[in-house]
Image (cartoon, rainbow, N blue to C red; front, side, top):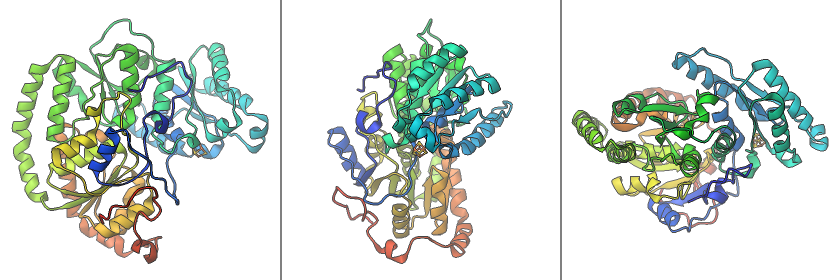
Amino acid sequence: MNKINIDEPAVSVREARLGSITGFNGTAKELIECSHAGKLADCSRSFSQCMGCSSGNAFCQLSMIKDAAVVNHAPVGCAGDFFGFNFVYRVGQMERNLPAATGRFFNTNIEERDTVFGAIQKLEDTVREAYKRVHPNAVFITTSCASGIIGDDMESASDKLTEELGIPVVACYCEGFKSKIWTTGFDSAYHSIVRKIVKPPKKKTNKVNIINFWGSHIFDEILNKLGYEANYIVPFSTIAQLEYISEAAATIQICPTLGTYIGAALEQIYGVPEIKTPPGYGIAGTDKWFRELGKVLNREEEIEKIIKKEHERVIPKLEEYREKLIGKTAYLTAGAAHGHAIIALLRELGLEVQGAAIFHHDPVYDNGDNTSDALAQDVQNYGDIKSYNVCNKQAYELVNILNRVKPDIMIARHGGMTLWGAKLGVPTLLIGDEQFGFGYQGVLNYADRIIETLDNKEFVSNLAKHSTMPYTKWWLQQDPFTFLGGNEHVENY
Ligand code: SF4
């Protein structure tokens, strides 16, 4: 178990804290065995394309707090993701019938001169300007490679501004260069929230924290039936709401890659129990998740009734879908824990998962409990995955693999990856709402979308005919793992 320490200004990166990796090629079972034995070693790449950045992932969470402002202390180029998150923020508000307000995002525009003389004055001026313009209830300052390298004293600046403005001004240390695992940025955002926003509980409430992105509110119905209320965090929450997440009856993770840190932090510091079973994807996984929820909320009898009723409703329909999908092949690319969730869904539906390119691997989560390992649960429930690749969005590897396996369908979790399937004429399905596949209904939801995508093969076949590919024939004939060193390549493709 990782001991959460909120006295430290910065959270330690996942490589150091959890032993997480970004390079592996082998079977899922090998990866799990190495992880649980504490023997997991990273394989580095001698050639790498673009990756994500911790700063972007911290921003992804902090930018969606309705009454906070974010000041990105960085060169203006680091603010390139403002546009995308502003779009998600506005759409998310409209979906929730909230006024579609524009994000309150600012950048300090660190320039060459500032890297010599320091940029603290620019930071202070920007925070004051942000306060004047949008009157936030808190300001989060996200750091960057540039502010980290020049060593601006963010702690002193944020303490001074907190006193001056009378609202929390919180530094969030998320420099991109510090970690190859960009999900470290989620941990940085949560560390800053738990350290400076969350207050000790005054009482216990019937609220259950749902650590999620901006997915649909499927937990309302489940929890209301049990006499509890869902509290979706962090996107679309307020500072006042976040102050008392310490009073919740439990914390649910929609994706432990996202919420490993805050789930463990709330349990360790404030005694809010975290549901440690992997999120409920696939029938067996959902049964297990519901039973754990029942145990933690003391609703075991009610949960057994829900499971029985849902099995009666869903399993006959599932059989019909399986008949249509049996023998179809799938390849998957996604972030770690949600990728494991999609593997469960695909195999539950009878598809053969030919392989997966998953962005990183956490051998353990912050709660230190191996039962939270969704990949291990997949292998236990459905058998091994022969071709399991840990690959931080290296498109050149993915294209080479797809060109070999030619699956009936590719499933992707992130927009930038889907085009490769389409260029190769592989029907590709992108589902951004992680709650869409959750629970019993989620299996049926996925089945519908997969069938719909397979029926549209003609569309991608035409796209492929008129597309060009930047990769040469030479590369497509090479071992996809030519540039991945350090382990023996398993000849799975
Ligand atoms: S990696 Fe560094 S320079 Fe690049 S966007 Fe992230 S913080 Fe900015």
